[in-house]
Length: 337
Ligand code: PEP
Ligand code: MN
Image 1 (spheres, helix red, strand yellow):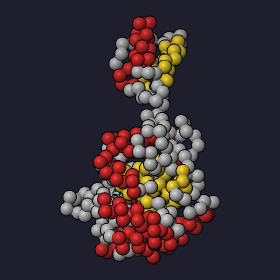
Image 2 (tube, helix red, strand yellow):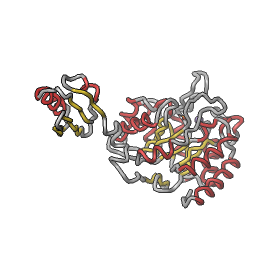
Image 3 (cartoon, helix red, strand yellow):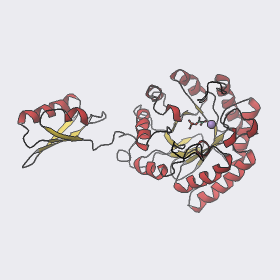
Image 4 (cartoon, helix red, strand yellow):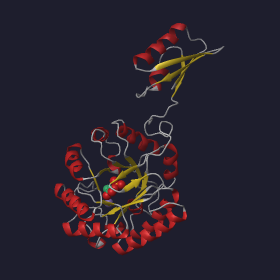
Protein backbone atom coordinates (compact mmCIF):
# COMPACT_ATOMS: atom_id res chain seq x y z
CA UNK A 1 0.00 0.00 0.00
CA UNK A 2 1.06 3.59 -0.48
CA UNK A 3 -0.32 6.57 1.41
CA UNK A 4 -0.28 9.83 -0.53
CA UNK A 5 -0.23 12.87 1.77
CA UNK A 6 -1.89 16.16 0.88
CA UNK A 7 0.30 19.08 -0.22
CA UNK A 8 -0.76 20.89 2.95
CA UNK A 9 -0.11 17.92 5.27
CA UNK A 10 1.90 18.80 8.39
CA UNK A 11 4.78 16.86 9.95
CA UNK A 12 2.34 15.86 12.65
CA UNK A 13 -0.01 14.36 10.05
CA UNK A 14 2.87 12.37 8.56
CA UNK A 15 4.02 11.16 11.98
CA UNK A 16 0.47 10.05 12.79
CA UNK A 17 0.30 7.91 9.64
CA UNK A 18 3.71 6.37 10.30
CA UNK A 19 2.73 5.59 13.87
CA UNK A 20 -0.50 3.94 12.72
CA UNK A 21 1.44 1.78 10.23
CA UNK A 22 3.93 0.72 12.89
CA UNK A 23 1.19 -0.06 15.40
CA UNK A 24 -0.32 -2.44 12.84
CA UNK A 25 3.02 -4.23 12.48
CA UNK A 26 3.96 -2.60 9.16
CA UNK A 27 6.99 -0.63 8.05
CA UNK A 28 6.83 2.89 6.60
CA UNK A 29 9.19 4.28 3.98
CA UNK A 30 8.93 8.03 3.36
CA UNK A 31 9.42 9.60 -0.04
CA UNK A 32 9.57 13.39 0.50
CA UNK A 33 8.86 15.06 -2.83
CA UNK A 34 9.02 18.78 -3.55
CA UNK A 35 5.28 19.15 -3.14
CA UNK A 36 4.10 16.24 -1.07
CA UNK A 37 5.19 13.17 0.85
CA UNK A 38 4.31 9.65 -0.20
CA UNK A 39 4.57 6.87 2.35
CA UNK A 40 5.33 3.35 1.13
CA UNK A 41 3.97 0.65 3.43
CA UNK A 42 5.42 -2.80 3.86
CA UNK A 43 2.66 -4.73 5.53
CA UNK A 44 4.31 -8.11 6.04
CA UNK A 45 1.81 -10.93 6.32
CA UNK A 46 -1.15 -8.88 7.47
CA UNK A 47 -3.12 -6.69 5.18
CA UNK A 48 -3.66 -3.05 6.16
CA UNK A 49 -6.93 -1.60 4.92
CA UNK A 50 -6.39 1.59 2.85
CA UNK A 51 -9.83 2.81 3.99
CA UNK A 52 -8.67 3.37 7.56
CA UNK A 53 -5.74 5.53 6.38
CA UNK A 54 -7.89 7.60 4.06
CA UNK A 55 -9.72 8.95 7.11
CA UNK A 56 -6.61 10.37 8.80
CA UNK A 57 -5.91 14.12 8.64
CA UNK A 58 -3.54 15.17 5.87
CA UNK A 59 -4.09 12.02 3.80
CA UNK A 60 -5.06 12.51 0.16
CA UNK A 61 -5.35 8.85 -0.77
CA UNK A 62 -4.29 5.34 0.24
CA UNK A 63 -3.90 2.75 -2.48
CA UNK A 64 -3.31 -0.97 -2.18
CA UNK A 65 -0.38 -2.06 -4.30
CA UNK A 66 0.21 -5.53 -2.97
CA UNK A 67 -2.60 -7.92 -3.70
CA UNK A 68 -4.89 -9.02 -0.87
CA UNK A 69 -3.88 -12.59 -1.68
CA UNK A 70 -0.14 -12.36 -1.23
CA UNK A 71 0.57 -16.06 -0.54
CA UNK A 72 -1.53 -17.21 -3.51
CA UNK A 73 0.02 -14.67 -5.87
CA UNK A 74 2.68 -15.31 -8.43
CA UNK A 75 4.58 -12.23 -7.27
CA UNK A 76 5.11 -13.84 -3.91
CA UNK A 77 5.81 -17.30 -5.37
CA UNK A 78 6.97 -17.03 -9.03
CA UNK A 79 7.38 -20.75 -9.77
CA UNK A 80 4.44 -23.15 -10.15
CA UNK A 81 3.39 -25.11 -7.11
CA UNK A 82 3.67 -28.79 -8.02
CA UNK A 83 2.67 -31.61 -5.70
CA UNK A 84 2.03 -35.32 -5.93
CA UNK A 85 -0.91 -37.12 -4.39
CA UNK A 86 -0.13 -40.85 -4.34
CA UNK A 87 1.11 -40.89 -7.93
CA UNK A 88 -1.01 -38.01 -9.30
CA UNK A 89 1.11 -34.92 -9.95
CA UNK A 90 -0.74 -31.61 -9.97
CA UNK A 91 0.98 -28.72 -11.72
CA UNK A 92 4.09 -28.75 -13.86
CA UNK A 93 2.54 -29.40 -17.28
CA UNK A 94 0.77 -32.65 -16.59
CA UNK A 95 -3.04 -33.04 -16.82
CA UNK A 96 -4.67 -35.11 -14.06
CA UNK A 97 -8.10 -36.68 -14.56
CA UNK A 98 -10.15 -36.74 -11.36
CA UNK A 99 -13.40 -38.64 -11.92
CA UNK A 100 -16.16 -40.49 -10.15
CA UNK A 101 -19.83 -40.16 -9.31
CA UNK A 102 -21.43 -37.03 -7.95
CA UNK A 103 -22.55 -38.98 -4.86
CA UNK A 104 -21.41 -42.25 -3.40
CA UNK A 105 -24.57 -44.37 -3.46
CA UNK A 106 -23.51 -47.94 -2.67
CA UNK A 107 -20.46 -50.18 -2.46
CA UNK A 108 -21.13 -51.61 -5.93
CA UNK A 109 -21.64 -48.20 -7.49
CA UNK A 110 -18.47 -46.60 -6.11
CA UNK A 111 -16.33 -49.67 -6.75
CA UNK A 112 -17.53 -49.98 -10.36
CA UNK A 113 -16.84 -46.27 -10.83
CA UNK A 114 -13.37 -46.57 -9.31
CA UNK A 115 -12.55 -49.45 -11.66
CA UNK A 116 -13.79 -47.43 -14.66
CA UNK A 117 -11.64 -44.45 -13.63
CA UNK A 118 -8.60 -46.66 -13.17
CA UNK A 119 -9.13 -48.56 -16.44
CA UNK A 120 -9.39 -45.36 -18.45
CA UNK A 121 -6.22 -43.89 -16.92
CA UNK A 122 -7.84 -41.52 -14.41
CA UNK A 123 -5.58 -40.75 -11.46
CA UNK A 124 -7.94 -39.69 -8.64
CA UNK A 125 -11.38 -40.96 -7.58
CA UNK A 126 -14.03 -38.44 -6.58
CA UNK A 127 -17.36 -38.98 -4.83
CA UNK A 128 -19.54 -36.95 -2.50
CA UNK A 129 -20.76 -38.20 0.87
CA UNK A 130 -21.84 -34.88 2.37
CA UNK A 131 -23.83 -33.31 -0.44
CA UNK A 132 -24.72 -29.63 -0.75
CA UNK A 133 -28.15 -29.96 -2.35
CA UNK A 134 -30.30 -27.01 -3.34
CA UNK A 135 -33.39 -28.78 -2.01
CA UNK A 136 -33.57 -30.24 1.51
CA UNK A 137 -35.73 -33.03 0.03
CA UNK A 138 -32.98 -34.21 -2.36
CA UNK A 139 -30.57 -37.02 -1.49
CA UNK A 140 -28.11 -35.59 1.04
CA UNK A 141 -25.38 -38.22 0.71
CA UNK A 142 -24.41 -41.29 2.74
CA UNK A 143 -22.26 -39.30 5.18
CA UNK A 144 -19.74 -41.35 7.15
CA UNK A 145 -20.68 -44.62 5.44
CA UNK A 146 -20.09 -42.96 2.06
CA UNK A 147 -16.66 -41.69 3.05
CA UNK A 148 -15.72 -45.20 4.16
CA UNK A 149 -16.98 -46.78 0.93
CA UNK A 150 -15.00 -44.22 -1.05
CA UNK A 151 -11.80 -44.95 0.86
CA UNK A 152 -12.35 -48.71 0.37
CA UNK A 153 -12.83 -48.26 -3.39
CA UNK A 154 -9.70 -46.10 -3.51
CA UNK A 155 -7.70 -48.74 -1.65
CA UNK A 156 -9.03 -51.53 -3.86
CA UNK A 157 -8.01 -49.73 -7.06
CA UNK A 158 -4.94 -47.90 -5.77
CA UNK A 159 -6.48 -44.49 -6.50
CA UNK A 160 -6.26 -41.52 -4.13
CA UNK A 161 -9.68 -40.13 -3.24
CA UNK A 162 -11.24 -36.69 -2.89
CA UNK A 163 -14.52 -35.81 -1.19
CA UNK A 164 -16.28 -32.69 0.03
CA UNK A 165 -16.63 -31.30 3.54
CA UNK A 166 -19.48 -28.89 4.20
CA UNK A 167 -18.99 -28.19 7.89
CA UNK A 168 -15.99 -27.91 10.25
CA UNK A 169 -17.34 -30.81 12.34
CA UNK A 170 -16.95 -33.17 9.33
CA UNK A 171 -13.26 -32.36 8.87
CA UNK A 172 -11.73 -34.95 11.24
CA UNK A 173 -13.74 -37.78 9.72
CA UNK A 174 -13.09 -36.77 6.11
CA UNK A 175 -9.40 -36.09 6.76
CA UNK A 176 -9.06 -39.60 8.22
CA UNK A 177 -10.33 -41.23 5.01
CA UNK A 178 -9.67 -38.86 2.12
CA UNK A 179 -6.37 -38.02 0.43
CA UNK A 180 -7.69 -34.64 -0.66
CA UNK A 181 -10.56 -32.53 0.68
CA UNK A 182 -12.98 -30.66 -1.56
CA UNK A 183 -14.49 -27.30 -0.67
CA UNK A 184 -17.62 -26.91 -2.78
CA UNK A 185 -18.71 -23.85 -4.71
CA UNK A 186 -21.33 -23.02 -2.10
CA UNK A 187 -18.72 -23.00 0.66
CA UNK A 188 -15.92 -21.12 -1.07
CA UNK A 189 -16.52 -18.17 1.22
CA UNK A 190 -17.30 -20.13 4.38
CA UNK A 191 -14.35 -18.55 6.11
CA UNK A 192 -14.68 -20.53 9.35
CA UNK A 193 -14.49 -23.74 7.30
CA UNK A 194 -11.45 -22.43 5.39
CA UNK A 195 -9.66 -21.39 8.60
CA UNK A 196 -10.25 -24.80 10.13
CA UNK A 197 -9.06 -26.58 6.97
CA UNK A 198 -5.91 -24.47 6.93
CA UNK A 199 -4.80 -26.26 10.11
CA UNK A 200 -5.27 -29.78 8.70
CA UNK A 201 -2.38 -29.73 6.20
CA UNK A 202 -4.11 -31.93 3.63
CA UNK A 203 -4.39 -31.12 -0.09
CA UNK A 204 -7.51 -29.06 -0.80
CA UNK A 205 -9.56 -28.82 -4.00
CA UNK A 206 -11.13 -25.37 -3.72
CA UNK A 207 -14.05 -24.79 -6.08
CA UNK A 208 -14.92 -21.33 -7.30
CA UNK A 209 -18.21 -20.01 -5.96
CA UNK A 210 -20.82 -19.55 -8.64
CA UNK A 211 -20.96 -15.81 -7.99
CA UNK A 212 -17.31 -15.35 -7.05
CA UNK A 213 -14.71 -13.41 -9.00
CA UNK A 214 -11.27 -14.79 -9.67
CA UNK A 215 -9.98 -12.43 -6.99
CA UNK A 216 -12.55 -13.78 -4.49
CA UNK A 217 -11.32 -17.29 -5.26
CA UNK A 218 -7.70 -16.29 -4.66
CA UNK A 219 -8.60 -14.62 -1.37
CA UNK A 220 -10.30 -17.82 -0.25
CA UNK A 221 -7.17 -19.76 -1.24
CA UNK A 222 -5.21 -17.28 0.88
CA UNK A 223 -7.13 -18.43 3.97
CA UNK A 224 -5.95 -21.99 3.28
CA UNK A 225 -2.36 -21.01 2.48
CA UNK A 226 -2.17 -18.94 5.67
CA UNK A 227 -1.94 -22.27 7.51
CA UNK A 228 1.50 -22.83 5.98
CA UNK A 229 0.57 -25.69 3.64
CA UNK A 230 0.40 -24.89 -0.06
CA UNK A 231 -1.17 -27.99 -1.63
CA UNK A 232 -4.26 -26.18 -2.88
CA UNK A 233 -5.92 -26.63 -6.28
CA UNK A 234 -8.16 -23.88 -7.67
CA UNK A 235 -11.18 -25.25 -9.54
CA UNK A 236 -13.26 -23.40 -12.12
CA UNK A 237 -16.71 -25.04 -12.22
CA UNK A 238 -18.87 -22.50 -14.03
CA UNK A 239 -20.41 -19.26 -12.85
CA UNK A 240 -23.92 -17.83 -12.89
CA UNK A 241 -24.59 -15.60 -15.86
CA UNK A 242 -27.74 -14.56 -17.74
CA UNK A 243 -27.29 -17.62 -19.98
CA UNK A 244 -29.65 -20.49 -19.22
CA UNK A 245 -28.69 -22.94 -21.99
CA UNK A 246 -26.15 -24.51 -19.64
CA UNK A 247 -26.36 -25.10 -15.89
CA UNK A 248 -23.57 -22.55 -15.37
CA UNK A 249 -21.29 -20.71 -17.76
CA UNK A 250 -17.83 -22.24 -17.83
CA UNK A 251 -15.42 -19.32 -17.45
CA UNK A 252 -12.56 -20.76 -19.47
CA UNK A 253 -10.69 -17.48 -19.39
CA UNK A 254 -10.29 -18.07 -15.65
CA UNK A 255 -7.74 -20.79 -16.50
CA UNK A 256 -5.06 -18.58 -18.11
CA UNK A 257 -6.00 -15.71 -15.80
CA UNK A 258 -5.49 -17.82 -12.67
CA UNK A 259 -2.29 -19.33 -14.05
CA UNK A 260 -0.98 -15.80 -14.59
CA UNK A 261 -2.07 -14.49 -11.19
CA UNK A 262 -1.23 -17.53 -9.08
CA UNK A 263 1.29 -20.34 -8.76
CA UNK A 264 -1.38 -22.86 -7.70
CA UNK A 265 -2.56 -25.68 -10.01
CA UNK A 266 -5.86 -24.97 -11.79
CA UNK A 267 -8.56 -27.59 -12.34
CA UNK A 268 -11.69 -27.38 -14.48
CA UNK A 269 -14.98 -29.14 -13.73
CA UNK A 270 -16.87 -29.28 -17.05
CA UNK A 271 -19.66 -31.45 -15.55
CA UNK A 272 -21.21 -28.92 -13.15
CA UNK A 273 -20.73 -26.11 -15.67
CA UNK A 274 -22.47 -27.98 -18.51
CA UNK A 275 -25.19 -29.74 -16.55
CA UNK A 276 -25.61 -32.08 -19.55
CA UNK A 277 -23.41 -35.05 -20.36
CA UNK A 278 -23.43 -34.26 -24.08
CA UNK A 279 -21.66 -30.95 -23.53
CA UNK A 280 -19.00 -32.26 -21.15
CA UNK A 281 -16.47 -33.51 -23.78
CA UNK A 282 -16.27 -30.18 -25.64
CA UNK A 283 -15.72 -28.24 -22.41
CA UNK A 284 -13.20 -30.78 -21.10
CA UNK A 285 -11.15 -30.68 -24.30
CA UNK A 286 -11.23 -26.88 -24.32
CA UNK A 287 -10.05 -26.85 -20.69
CA UNK A 288 -7.05 -29.04 -21.54
CA UNK A 289 -6.25 -26.73 -24.45
CA UNK A 290 -6.59 -23.68 -22.19
CA UNK A 291 -3.94 -25.06 -19.84
CA UNK A 292 -5.88 -26.74 -17.04
CA UNK A 293 -3.72 -28.87 -14.75
CA UNK A 294 -6.61 -31.18 -13.89
CA UNK A 295 -10.16 -32.08 -14.89
CA UNK A 296 -12.97 -33.07 -12.54
CA UNK A 297 -15.55 -35.20 -14.35
CA UNK A 298 -18.67 -36.93 -13.05
CA UNK A 299 -19.37 -40.48 -14.20
CA UNK A 300 -21.97 -43.07 -13.19
CA UNK A 301 -22.57 -46.78 -13.99
CA UNK A 302 -26.17 -45.90 -14.91
CA UNK A 303 -26.67 -42.11 -15.13
CA UNK A 304 -30.45 -42.47 -15.47
CA UNK A 305 -30.68 -43.86 -11.93
CA UNK A 306 -28.11 -41.55 -10.27
CA UNK A 307 -29.24 -40.02 -6.97
CA UNK A 308 -27.63 -36.69 -7.92
CA UNK A 309 -26.42 -35.03 -11.11
CA UNK A 310 -27.36 -37.94 -13.40
CA UNK A 311 -28.02 -35.69 -16.44
CA UNK A 312 -24.43 -34.45 -16.46
CA UNK A 313 -22.79 -37.78 -15.61
CA UNK A 314 -20.92 -39.67 -18.32
CA UNK A 315 -21.38 -43.39 -18.83
CA UNK A 316 -18.19 -45.40 -18.43
CA UNK A 317 -17.96 -45.80 -22.22
CA UNK A 318 -18.33 -42.07 -22.81
CA UNK A 319 -15.71 -41.42 -20.12
CA UNK A 320 -13.26 -43.85 -21.72
CA UNK A 321 -13.67 -42.11 -25.05
CA UNK A 322 -13.29 -38.66 -23.44
CA UNK A 323 -10.01 -39.80 -21.86
CA UNK A 324 -8.67 -40.80 -25.26
CA UNK A 325 -9.63 -37.45 -26.78
CA UNK A 326 -8.18 -35.48 -23.85
CA UNK A 327 -4.96 -37.41 -24.16
CA UNK A 328 -4.69 -36.48 -27.83
CA UNK A 329 -5.25 -32.78 -27.11
CA UNK A 330 -2.75 -32.85 -24.25
CA UNK A 331 -0.14 -34.58 -26.39
CA UNK A 332 -0.66 -32.11 -29.26
CA UNK A 333 0.35 -29.42 -26.75
CA UNK A 334 3.39 -31.31 -25.46
CA UNK A 335 1.64 -32.30 -22.25
CA UNK A 336 0.64 -35.68 -20.89
CA UNK A 337 -2.48 -37.09 -19.28
C1 PEP B 1 -19.70 -31.62 -6.69
O1 PEP B 1 -18.50 -31.61 -7.01
O2 PEP B 1 -20.39 -32.64 -6.67
C2 PEP B 1 -20.35 -30.33 -6.37
C3 PEP B 1 -21.41 -30.25 -5.57
O3 PEP B 1 -19.79 -29.29 -7.02
P1 PEP B 1 -20.00 -27.69 -6.84
O4 PEP B 1 -19.65 -27.39 -5.43
O5 PEP B 1 -19.04 -27.13 -7.84
O6 PEP B 1 -21.42 -27.40 -7.18
MN1 MN C 1 -22.32 -33.15 -8.62
